[in-house]
Length: 209
Image 1: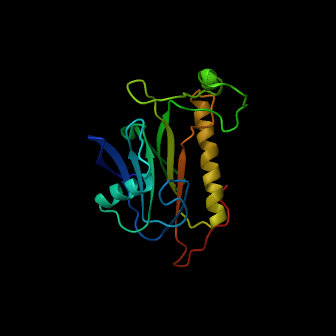
Image 2: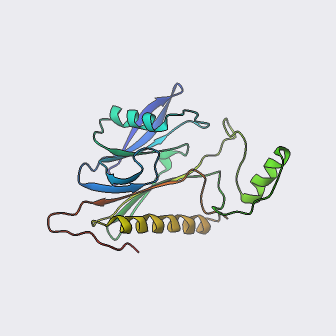
Image 3: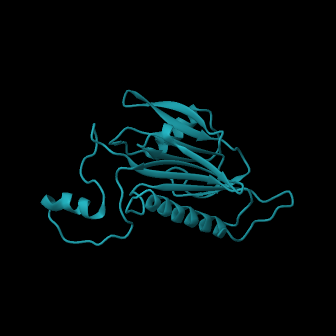
């Protein structure tokens, strides 16, 4: 995971960074990503920074093209964010490697009280749940996406990978609270868990607490 390469792609006439991790064949991943989401064999993971106010309606095709242009082959996972990828965080613990990019300018609780409001009161709703509302492009834009990619050292069953994704999400909420944010995340967060295939005498672990 620490060897994820930093590359560039062009969008709206400007250069933007992207991170590409290419472990190759022999990995199963579970992801909520727009490209390669769900469960299955995946050979690479791309996390691409895009411009504020990104308006393309083909994000999966866009991510696939960026990955192909960087030489990635086979099935993969693609995530995107407007957060600064150069501020990425990387950590390892107990054989688990994690790479996180975080923008929390737009944040809130997954379950928040709702109320009936008119269009004129939209900004009040944003204040209530801790999020920005309305157009956010331009100099005043604050990115709001937390992308988490982590690799485990042992094969896991599909249900254990779901458990691992749940634990990673819980850890994200804990980290946000520890950092002083009254929030559980942002509306566009994504996560990808990777584990090696079973084989060569190794069996799938049925648990991931």
